Length: 257
Image (cartoon, rainbow, N blue to C red; front, side, top):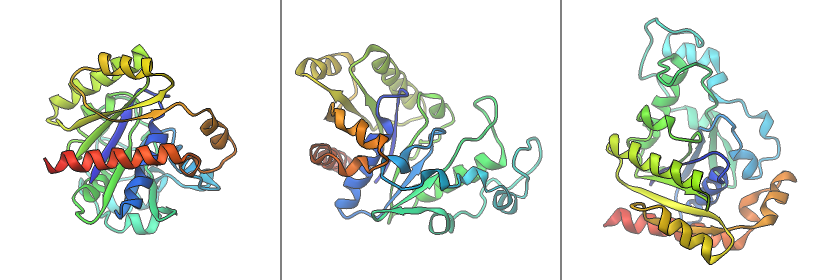
């Protein structure tokens, strides 16, 4: 199963990614998680002790130049669009409780149409993993909708948009639905997050038309404390873990239909 997780910044996208990755692993999948958000918080959320020590893939300048034939940071020249990447997960991922985690890092270029060696390298890595039938891939995408205009997630099985009970979050989710449809991505599901009351849930169901909900995570104050302490969020709540498992079951069932 290939899943991309997106949504407005600050809605709990990374936490959702972490819980779903763990649920996939517990369901027997071989899981690779890619942190494609420039903020790069996935490893920390999953309890990796020294996330600051992880070198993002886009910073492997010598390797990128070797594989693409062009020095990172430059544009306008010719370079290899499909560089060798099949060895990258084994060599550069970190293992967190049996889940391989890769940090992509931010391509520091202006404009949404960056076509540079760093981008070619990351894109080809994602494409390679999307075509690997033995691996379940989950992508923690950058916040917002800009990445959809590049078609980055065109080949995923599911686009999961995380939404909290707030108008701006809903607006972003609806824009994501519209842009996803433009690139032919029709399997979209929502995950409601930080649900405090039945009213919160009813609001999201009524406001987000045309996107089915795979599940709802409750608001849990303790998760923030756990994250600040540098501990694993995904082992801190049995309730969230159970719901994540139900989300995975829902996505698998709908995929089979």
